[in-house]
Length: 239
Length: 239
Image 1: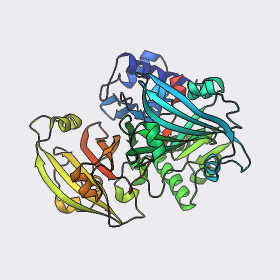
Image 2: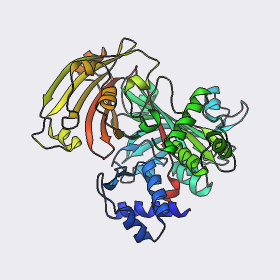
Image 3: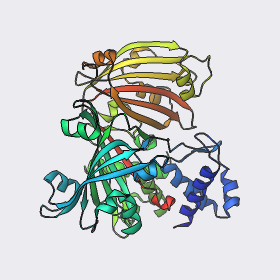
Image 4: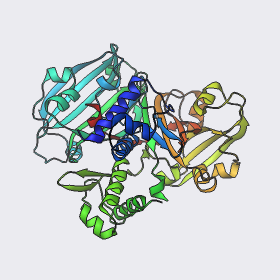
């Protein structure tokens, strides 16, 4: 971990420990410099890092303020974390419906940028929040990157396995969200009626080198899911 | 505009002019330094700025690559821009249903952090894409910040008016997305049936000083809208 990353983490801990909320003021730049005994440049780089992740905002001549990031009970669409971490106040469980090696469709090949004859892991799970059905998830993992997967891992946290065991550094992801009416099969899984709303989120996960390794499609129960998204201006770059 | 912002903008222009896509390689750091005749530090700051906005990614020892940002026909949830800019390939129009000064509900007061007796502009519009109904929008503007608004402005682009005329610098926003079934009135507006899916997005827009000035609630036509969201890891800060 680089020094500025360490300082950024310390500032995050400060926010967490003091339970600071949106708009609460942080110590000034000078105070942070003397508190952490590092150079001004290191603190500035740490603050820029936190700002780019939507965790703080800086107002010239006024100070540094907390930006609310976690919203209890919301799925944070900008975060690369498993539901277990995002919804950690809740009891989350999974049921594996299918796990196998397949040659995927052309669409999935294109999303994962793989050749036509390359096998992937296909995983289909039902996921529950507090024992209630929450979503249906289908994932395709590039076998060259996710070399091994089994049912036990899939019942627990695939995200933890990828990051802690396979040491994959998941760096960015793209989500495509649309809403339609549920077909009979998905309605049955979600314990809803055919024609009820279904929220479909397709996601592509990338490693730090820009290689996509996981394409997933989730259908959410519309009464059990809500989403939080932050936007940032790059107005200065546009005008 | 600061020098690094100017360079960031130049790099964005380069991506646009050469029509570079996700995964395409940009010139190296050294090449950018000599091309723009600025210091290495300025280029590094420009690249960090672009990376924090999800426009590029940098792979150590390998190079600088384009990250796809605009997805044609998708509403980009991270961008602070009017639909006119986001969906610029399409013909967008608005119909004002209501524009008046009101004392808003307690919920709206809380979102805008205003006192109980403070009037706001309330604006209700229907918005059309290629002549088809696309969403119902209700917005509440803090009158201390948006001091004037009229029907003509509301028929055109409120966003352009705020940024170009009132010179407001909109810096960040929070979206809350959920899905439900349409009631009779909203179904009628959207030319759908009661009970059909409705996508509700509540948004709060903030100025650079962290002050919220616009709270809006949009109900989207589920067949006419789809959303694009990018996520970025701050894994290094979490572990």
